[in-house]
Image (cartoon, rainbow, N blue to C red; front, side):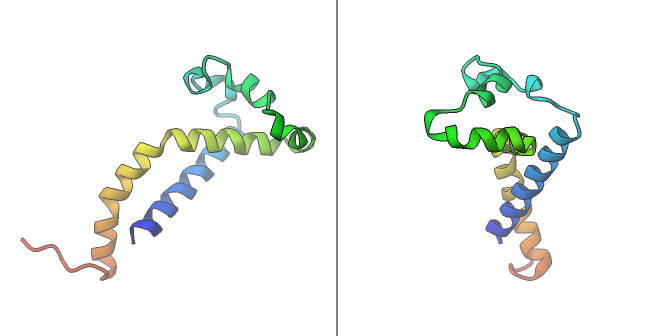
Length: 105
């Protein structure tokens, strides 16, 4: 039950973050630079490691892949919140669906 709950929260968070970046509510410049060691996130995404040079053409042809990368990075920053939500929601969902016994008073 917890794995399913976490997966739903993860993919919902990823989808919402993708929409936020895709519709322009946030941009790469709005993200903190602490996660990229002081390099602005937009520059960090443009300067790929050597093993990813083959994907550069794909990023230029399809800018939504860059949006997906930003959404994924933001989703990963929210990991502690997703874990807390799972710990809080999983038992309640399990009881509501009958996978766990009712809470004894």
